[in-house]
Length: 450
Image (cartoon, rainbow, N blue to C red):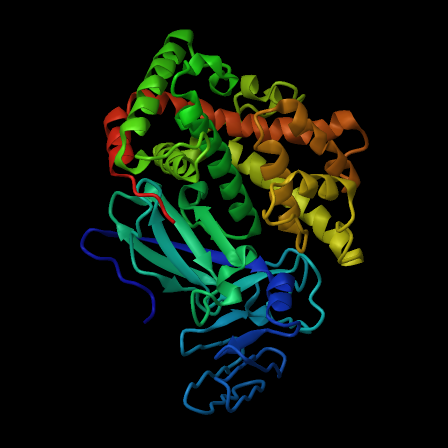
């Protein structure tokens, strides 16, 4: 039984992983449904897909099982898909029970050469690893998703709110393009799920990236060496509504302590640049550890955090996670519809061109190959900025997608998502003053990645 069993002090976390089938198939060479051994691909029989490790390949329907060579991978028995050799990557169309585009029947099959953009299917044979938000260390053994896309990981008891699920398509080596492709890497905060069964998909991964980057940006503004001699009150990045003045004063004072601690930390020795990737990594570690202490599903929208959003008061009893995920799915669906009409629809759009021209030399260019790419572009290029005026320029994208008829309605998307993020920030920043000992330990023991 591949399902991990709980240890004496262990807790099981189970969920489902579903990803964009059209992109995975394209990344695998245009006609990939399943691959074993890395270079041989075969599909047949409608519901049954099989691949062998380079020598013999067979596929068939019904109860047919085929095997060949030394590295045997076989599939058969209707919806069953099995993998060997550790190099398995597959989207099992036949096991799909909840696709958002195609197909809708549990027994439907797809032509692997013609999978529409936005076809979301269970991901079989992908790797899922539970990682601690607080320490960045692995909490339990890696597991593979089963033939229906489900996974179960085991983590130490009491760490449930500290779990970040890191998932991706496995490969033959660390340099395998399927491993290094960021579009095939999915990181999701387990605590995002109100049901306790975290779903790893395009939208939850996009939202996780956005939340982590925007929370990190606030801590980074505190920790950067350029601000060491300044008072935290000098930066508007810390001034958000509804934090009482007395509490804000305490946060500002502690910010000075934080910056001095960073300056004296072992990892900081010899650092001279005012904006270092090492400090950015530390900001991510601290902000992640603070987010781990927040029950994200109990954070409701604070209307004061969403000034400019006309529906803020009406949605004040709504959970921010649901509000943001609904917007992510709306944007992704609209972008997928454009890509279905024209795979190159976004290539020459003025907003993509302008964004690429603004990037530093050598930075990866923005390219929209699947709908969630556009979500990432919007929230991390526009919404992660502390400049509201710049964030509102995202209206050009929202209007182009047909999600708004004018600037005023387009701006509402920005106000909603940014207001939701600020509602979480409102819960996070005060933790700076109650978690000082742990933060100090994190700074002094921090070892940056290369």
